[in-house]
Image 1 (tube, rainbow, N blue to C red):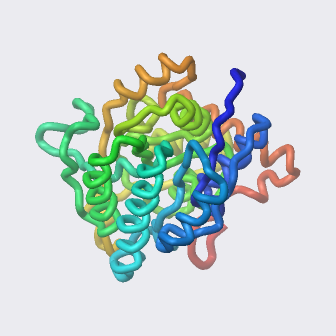
Image 2: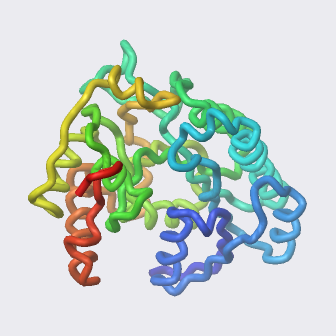
Length: 311
């Protein structure tokens, strides 16, 4: 690796993506200072920036809600405080200090429409978000729009993140636990490939908005078929319609395909790998199976269907 004398600092070190970034930096022998302050405390963030004087900040902090984004519907003030006010406060503090920020954001701010049909063209970074079916997505679209005024930030739009460990936050683990899933092609982000790319983009001080997904689209059934082939041959699932799904959720879910031309060009410039979503998903799930086998936790560590009486 080329030398890197940047000082990197991370917000969101307790989260899933933050913890993966910490591991990645450790593996590369690079220092990543983990912030203790929270996004809702501007003064504490300012004190930490003054103390550590980073040249690069990575922000993987935010409220997604537990167990899912439906939580944000009934906790709207808290969601605004963190996702909007907090994200802007950190960006603003960094802007006045000429610190570059990489924000792990979301692409769940679009949905298929008459111009962007399933199997058709994807949404580019320039297009106005058209999805506010959940309060979570609404705050994310709002903050992204405001952040366009800052020239020190790289906004990475992740979707339905997948990794090579079958943890609860992994999109594959989530849908493997459901009895019924919808089947819609979507853009998705395989973190195994994408987090190294995010660090390269931070180092290069790239700015602006990027659709941060592996190229192409993949449907729920295609993901679960790869899971069946690579991880659990006995796995079964059923489908249901978007209308049926809507009856059991408090808020909507975004389905879309994002154009990744801009990201593909950046990855090529940086000499970084960016496999298509089908290849990346298969590689990640083969890795996940191997990790369970290596840990002596196969098949015991496989996701189990939710609810009573489920195997």
